[in-house]
Length: 436
Length: 56
Figure 1 (cartoon, rainbow over the protein chains, first blue to last red):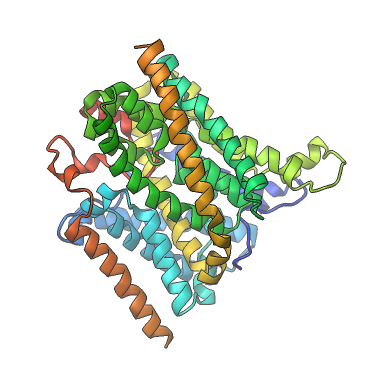
Figure 2 (spheres, chains in turn cyan, brown):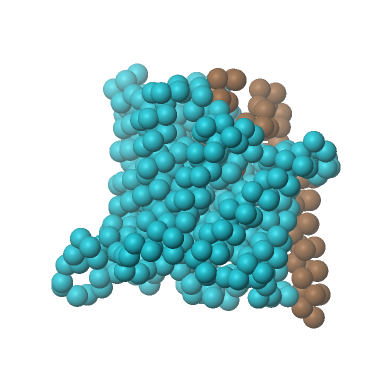
């Protein structure tokens, strides 16, 4: 089970549309986006923040909507599972119920205000809870049946696509694009080459997931890259854990360093936005420096986030056309590339294009933002279900094997250091010299 | 034995959580900053930054 990858692989048939998990992720994501966009789903309940008691997170008037959400997701997923015939519903539903309950618990951990300030959100707690169960009492078969991590991740990614709005690119103009898009591909390629040629790490998928998380935007980018290159669950778990720990260190350390060296606010903000992995942590770090830095930091990050889909697409293409081809000289045909291409990425890109170029011009940015507020909650639920499931399917022995003498950590540290230096240089040139 | 391990795992999880909440190592400065709103600090990568910036 632990060797299971995140994307399956088969020849294209018409029945794939209702047989393959990839396509079901597209349908699930599409249905939820549609229901929200047309106003049938008005509010998606979520677990709130709390300070001293977890009861604050679920007020009494939230309980019924939460149950309705659970029923809606259960019905939707059950239809897919039944049509795919991948699991008996009598096995799937009991497992799913516990996975959902564990997701609620993970949200409760992650939504405590101090924990939220650290940026240690639900993903880390969901993984931890799943890992503790899997590595102590072991995940029972009935629970494994409900832990469909691939399906939840892919559905979450299709929902995430809607949040990637291309109009964000224009918000800071040329200097923002220069920092966010100039540095990212350089760091990504540098880290991939460093990992494969210098560190000689055995798993290319682990290298690219670390490189994408470091150069683009942390956890979301790691998930997209992992799904695009068929990474192992343990690889994704390792990268998420590593990224989140270093994000906290950078969130606290970098603003202090910027103040110490007296860097200009806009340059400092761009530096934070281009380097710190999670958007929430970027905003928190920017706030240390002031309003202007905070705004620049957040927008640079938003511009960088647009790259998730593009990077995932290219990783998927590179994997099916180069990496998985191995040492054979024969070039794969377009049809073969299509057969192996993870189809949910198309759903991700479609959602992004529809929301950016169709919905915003038709209903306006404000309406789209209010729709996205709800779809983000859906996406959060699916990612949380996925992280609980990944934890339940992972074991410490396999995780420690992925550490392979600390090479992933070396790769992360070297890549992040390169990212920090290069981003500072470009931010200084863009915001400090050219467009000062 | 398995359940003892599970119990230890849960205890460790709660201990880490409680230690972070009670001692807040390294982030006292954030809490002191009155302009910050904890609700604006999200974990996920693509939360509603636009709304937050408008609010700010």
